[in-house]
Image (tube, rainbow, N blue to C red):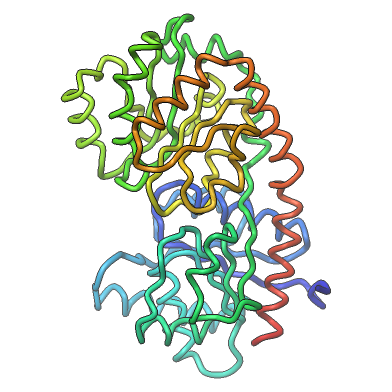
Length: 377
């Protein structure tokens, strides 16, 4: 695929207020496209962490929108008008949406815009099925191209788009952010852990589909074999109270700590003996796994969605069935017990990230997908 004939003016728009794999992907893609000479704008609700980080990174931003979930006619109509005004003023070549609310806002704005329109790209970050109802059929007829995070997502779009309208492009971690000079020992001491404790960490929003409860149900069996194991959950979300209640009911709350949202995730990863992603559904890739590998941390994950693209069983880590706390506990025990081998797998994972999940490839592949969208428009 040939390069664009001129630098593109691109708008990324996203509905999320908090931080996670999706906002990280947008920021990394924006940086990669800027390196290729394109002008990139980032849009989201006022106060969104992505918008603030993009502004700090030197990108033009637009945050005069709310993009609230659910059926809210008045704010949604206000968003439609705000997006349409922006599109008329700035004349973007291409718009890339990343969530449901922002995709609908852009689709409706483009439908009422009039005149030449920008190419419309939708990036799907999760692996939840897409209903083939009339509303979605209307929506996807207006989308020129879809970028998915892993090939496993592509089949969910059958019947809505032709295969040549879909491109799988994996996310990448921020390599510079995960260069931590502080020693592992000092970080562990700062977090209040003893030298002989083995720290198992999960970095994910606290939501049912992330499977924190599955890991917790396996903790009693893990503690029987590795009594010095300690479990750290980094992130915030609606499941926090349920997680704390389950830990108390299982009698393991002494071994579990919830750290909430943290800006120093690279430091915390460096302190871990093992990273676990116990998701039960909706996981397209798991950027946090790539970040763990980049930090040199062994990994256990559930075989959900596209996680197998990064956790290659018994090569870069251990992959287990989802929803099984017995299988998850067994894999955690195996990694903590055979730590030298686990570290070798983690090194394999790090080399994989460096060669396959880098920002240059992200920029090049995204640019090629955008060319396809422009040609279709």
